[in-house]
Image (tube, rainbow, N blue to C red):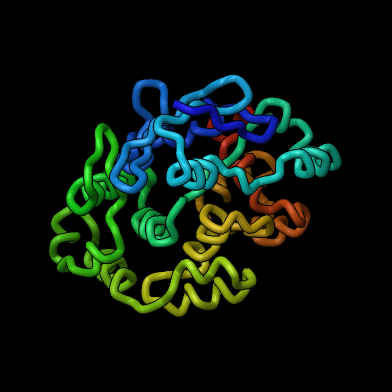
Length: 273
């Protein structure tokens, strides 16, 4: 086991809350007070430690994945400085200080996760996605590796239909796996170009593209205004008549972190508290 320092401030329990909020996630599994992720066929366990986390095993192969997963790309202190000027965030930040939003470590996984959550509750999405992971992924210990793009490309749509996906979602996921788009190359593109490339793919709309920018690329200005949970959070904190799409400009250039803090705050520290 090795120690990995996480940039201060960091609250491991708070930052991993979303992995406990909607039921188990077999690819990012909260198990025995630690987060488990399969990396190159090995199960990696991450637990809280002073100044960061303990990771087993920690090496040149697993460290970059853990850094991505734990949201090292986010700079919290500039966001906190900005939040002192914003009435709602200035009240919310003290309760959520150290929340470092976790990120998807693979672009294909990020998009499939969003497709699975289209127009259903997150609890339902997690349930179907877990069946998909168990059917097409590889188990290593308690957790499973998320299915590879190559494995899904070889699957029949009816196989996904049998797991609980709708016909359209099965088509979207298999179609994405078989498409020749280079998802990794999108990391070098501007936000607008990323969105244009994604929405050109069947089954991917602005909502999915926005979450790709937010939870895979960690783009600071990503604002998934079409997300139902974010709409509810904004309504709760700013009022039911608030225009979710336009209010995002008021958080510039910290829309992404603001979205994550509002979503988490709505779950663990709602305004009625």
